[in-house]
Amino acid sequence: MDRLRAGGVVAALLVAMSCSERARQVQSDAELKRAVDQMMPAVERATGLRFKHRPLVLRRTRADVRDYVIHKFDKDLPPAELDGVQAAYRLFGLLPDSVDLRRTMIDLLGEQVAGYYDADSSALYIRTDIDPALARTVISHELAHALQHQYIDLNSLIQQRQQNDRRTAAQAILEGQATLVGLLVLMPEQKIEDLPRFWDQRDAVSRQQAQMPMFANTPQWLRESLIFPYLAGADFVRWFETGHPGKQPFGSLMPTSTEQILHTERYAAGDRPIALAFVGPALDTVRYEDDLGEFETRLLLEQFLGDEREATTLATGWGGDRYEVLGRAAAAVVWYSVWDNAAAADRFAGGLRRAWSKRRWGGQAVRRSEITRLAVGRLPGVRLVDAPASWAGWKHLPRVKLK
Image (cartoon, rainbow, N blue to C red):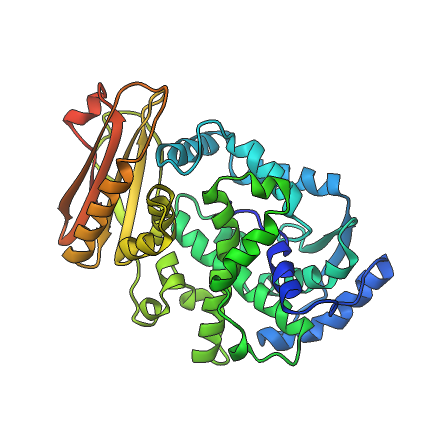
């Protein structure tokens, strides 16, 4: 999800909710180029950065956009990695077994992408059938990405392998800044400190997005993952700009976890995620390995417990995590997490046991699960193992160490 952007649709909805009929219509190629030229100085003022060169701007048909989505998806998530990601999220219960991840993502993004900035070609693309009233919002959002790319390597941030949480945090900065830029460009009189909390608007944004058929029928994990970088990212960037005037949240200042995005006080305190690594030769085929991070840990708990507030409480205190998907047909998942203190680990372990008791497999071989409180090095930790009851790996469970 976080390797392809939704092309400003979420940002456009935020602007539409904030002010109606504020954006002048953009209908022709000449108007498109004129709008880019007019908005570039406003984007510079909103970011504090200057364009080193004018980005190329082109139109693409809906079919062209879908072809691009397919190309980027297959390039960034090749078949072996796609198989592992799909298996992992099915095992965690975040993706139903009946949902094909590739087809769903391509259909979803084909519906959502109104425009995009392509770092490979350094060009900004706007869909030909975009609602003219939304065009300027999408242009300003994608211009922000074009400007970002003139100072940082977007591909190196978004294509980090098996670092899901770090990659999501980076995407939140990129999309959050672009979302703020879009609002400030179209509402130049708006003061950044007077804007409401974006994350508090997620229900309203979700309801608006639900008018789109693919979004409405997409699993919660994908819907929330689509919205998170824009809204939570915008909240973080606004906080950062208030406390770090004249600086950019890039390079050494880039957040490294969704915990830092969700809890700015943890970022301010320099609380970096704890890196875990599996040790020793695996006794079964390692199909995939990655982490969830605090945000997706929260989504997992909310999925089964049905209570966002409780899930938020249980996921707070996350310090780091790592999982492996092992085996083939009836795969096993081994997930370790470490926590800020024993109380947080105990709280999470108890909540995860309640959540996992609601996990329903349906039609699969008899499975066994264990949730164990343990120590990982010097830190309080929790281990989840879920696998077929007959899995040979039960006798020698994978172990982790602090990196």
